[in-house]
Image (cartoon, rainbow, N blue to C red; front, side, top):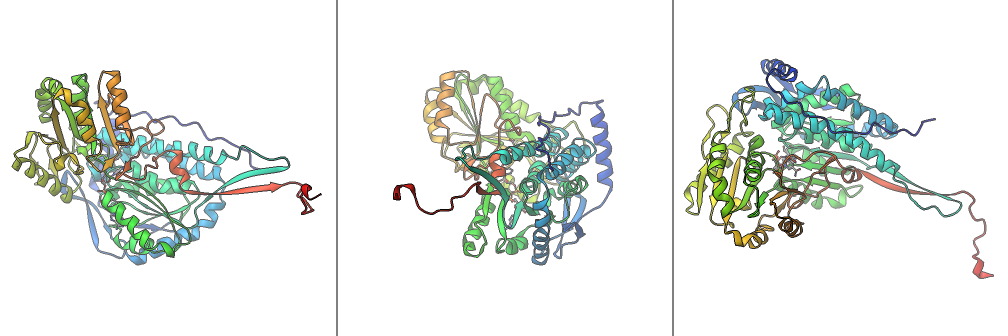
Length: 542
Ligand SMILES: NC(=O)c1ccc[n+]([C@@H]2O[C@H](COP(=O)([O-])OP(=O)(O)OC[C@H]3O[C@@H](n4cnc5c(N)ncnc54)[C@H](O)[C@@H]3O)[C@@H](O)[C@H]2O)c1
Ligand SMILES: N[C@@H](CCC=O)C(=O)O
């Protein structure tokens, strides 16, 4: 008989510092060298077996040194997709039948492997493949993914123990939190190794089997994550990984009768394409697919005239430029009153110009390169446009150079016009638009920016005036799914600030929280009557 058990209570994984002389720094440097030396082959994993995709070869390079090829993959084809779905369906009965505690143990073991022997391996992979600095890799690839796994187990257990609170006499009511019928299609972005690890494992923990399509520019870390999950005991076929651009995979997966859900993080246009396709195919599915998507942002910092200038300056620099602004939460527009701007402008420009950027294996840098040539071209064009427009002034940065890596200097653009596209369009790079306003216009400015961009992911108010904070919190209620007071709008921590946004930023199903896990279950209500009636007449019939 199985005991009713409770998994360990999670706490957030502490961030290691990588300060000079620290053991983690030495271990990381050693691991970087090991991974750099090797040519990697990123193969599909279908039913636990490695195989090459049937499509064209794609190279995975270091963004800060694009001549350095880390490895290659073969694009997944429709045949690969069919095989992955077949494997997911074949694995489903045993996976569903496996006791929940055993599933939890696999995920908790994965977290411990990552906290231990895999930590520097996955950090190094994330640095090399996605151009994250040591600290940015640590908070993502190590700590956030460990937290996702440990907290998800905790929340999943809570969901399962959530049972009906009322039972009429002689009756026992129960809820059976069933997995979905079919496979979940997890599609993950380049920018967070933690998100790539969470999106396939969250539905798996709830008893589903998964087809996982990582981003080609995150494949180096994705392949290692898959290896880690296998070592943790994830059975063959529960998570099937298909490298490549996903175009052929979607042709099969989105038209498949057994598509039970999509767990997506990435850009708004991609998500809208997926949703539209599901809509077109709606009559062909066994069940209505669950669609969960966390997408783009145009995240803001609003400063009140009472703002502490230093707090604002640091929030702007860290919020906009950490990881080259390639966080969906990154501050890309700021609204600053004239009086405060006068106090921070020179220092903000000087601090921004002083941010060191380069090959992230040199741990002295604050930033690395943007992810690929497509992102580079987009930022280059946005900066060139800013230089051309009269109402825009490039105050800091503005230089781009892709001769070695895809480098875009952290750029601050001041705009006299808060309706310029720089305040509504997501560039997803190190470009911060600033609108400086007359102090007396605080409320008008907030009302204008509240819905100027279509997104509603993150935002921050910087103020020392409690009434202004309260007013902004109310006025901006629907403008951000994650709202920060006197802090940068990035760096949400699992279990502390569940992450996700509304409007064009997604379905707001908060990654790493119970609400997300609930999307991967289909509850069945069970009523048991101990002594059922044997006569169909009612008392009022006499
Ligand atoms: N809201 C959030 O939590 C969050 C978190 C991280 C990133 N993002 C967003 O992600 C974007 C950056 O990531 P990206 O550049 O990887 O996004 P993207 O939309 O270009 O790609 C995301 C994933 O979708 C895949 N893809 C694209 N078309 C596909 C198709 N037809 N079928 C199957 N897969 C397909 C890509 O290969 C990749 O794996 C930004 O917009 C950012 O704001 C949002
Ligand atoms: N959760 C991260 C952002 C993830 C998206 O890229 C943050 O809060 O900064």
